[in-house]
Every structure is written in C-alpha cells, then in structure tokens.
Length: 134
Image 1 (cartoon, helix red, strand yellow):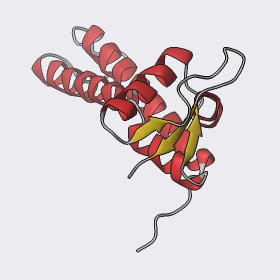
Image 2 (cartoon, rainbow, N blue to C red):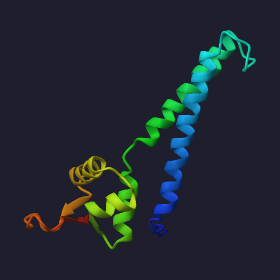
Image 3 (cartoon, one colour):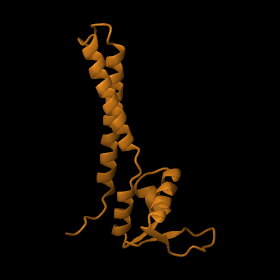
Image 4 (cartoon, rainbow, N blue to C red):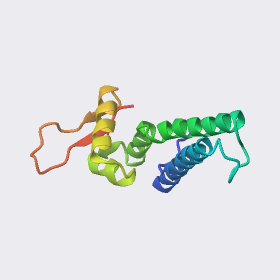
C-alpha cells in the first residue's frame, strides 16, 4: 500500500471547511441562545432552544479545536513527497501556517524523532533543512 503524495489544495480545502463549520455552528448556536426568550425569528423558545443552541455552540467549539490542531501528519506527508527533506519555508508556504505554528511543528517532529537537522551548524543566511527518519 503506497502513500498518496501530499496535495496542499485538498489540505487547505479541508481546513477551510473546518473553519466555516466551526464558526457557523458557534454563531448559529449563540443566536439561538440569545433568542431563546422571544418567539421571533426562531420558533424555538424555552428549554428546547437552550438545548439546541448549547449543542450547536458546543459542536462549533469542538470543531474549532480540531481546526486549531497542528498538522503534524500533513507535515510528514509533505516531507515524504519531497524525497524526505523538509524546511521551515516549505511548511510555511505549503500549509499556510504562521511562523509560530511552523516552529512548533518542527519542534514536535524533532522531539518525536521523526525529523533530524541535516546540518546543524549552518551560517545564519542559510535555512536549516531537516531529514525524515521514519
């Protein structure tokens, strides 16, 4: 069974759907909770509106947690698709992450033993490259 090459468009589409689902659910749940006392515009009032609104808000919050997880698996797939080599710029551009998230992913993968620096003593103007171990 061969692993499929990394496709950044599929990854970015999935993250976009997760973000829209999480924010949409939290906003809709908040609106239902705020409107639980009045029958207009939602016909739900009382306990059912509180339960539905709370459930929607909770689901949105859960999805937001999933959306904010570091894409460690995708970083390993990206390294495999680039013949086992990875750099900070590759992660930053392909996964569209912040600099802080990129550093956290590299730190997690190095501490887990999945990546190792190719040449740890490089001049400051050269970028550190990492090699996939497993």
